[in-house]
Length: 114
Length: 115
Image (tube, rainbow over all chains, first blue to last red):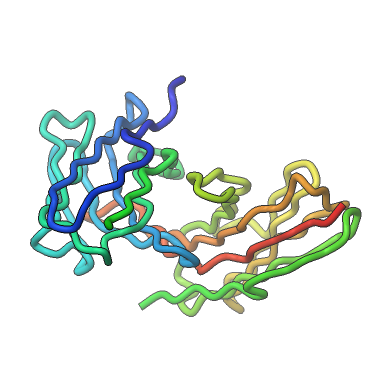
């Protein structure tokens, strides 16, 4: 499978715990995006990487959130001191900075904070 | 700030009906527009991407149209089937010099096709 993959697919945690999600983009894609989707809403942009550089962060990305893409390949999204309001689907997408720059989405990680 | 609205929020139809989902956006300076399908608890599946220079795209029973000047797109589904039941999301795509393509999504239309 050469699509975008995310791990884990589901995560249940208690309030106050830290969680980390991983995204593996399509191998030749140099752009990577994180989105958050709450129930009944469309996905909202969180952050964007061009290779290993994090070039933009949404105001939705509070200081409890940090994202990395250390070697310009996979990316991690960490949430510290989780709150119930962090419960959502976290989606990753990747694209190639040529042609239509179409974003391809992974299956998402569903986070539930108890 | 780009805002995307989808109407209706939910739709329930009998099998075999043709139907239209609507998407409107406030800023017509878009790069492309994309329609996605999302099954419950799952990620996004791209259905159709319309470039700003195009008026429509077709894939099987799906046809998407784009009118940039009026800020509207429609997704037409012909001969609907129970397997079409899902949430359909419209996303407007803009290009930013330093941040790649930016997708702004609507809230989706939840479609139920009854056998």
